Image 1 (cartoon, rainbow, N blue to C red):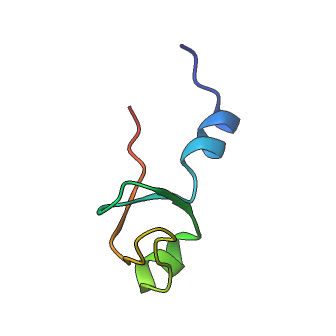
Image 2: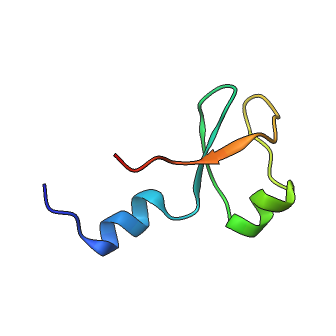
Length: 53
């Protein structure tokens, strides 16, 4: 499969996954690093970037 920069940016840019419930959250990087963003489902602030396969 060919990867386009526009598609990669849309899929992976500013997308984080909750480590507890595995739900996706789209938020700016700096807010996630500062701990200001929480998961909508479980209210956890433990997030990781979405993995690129």
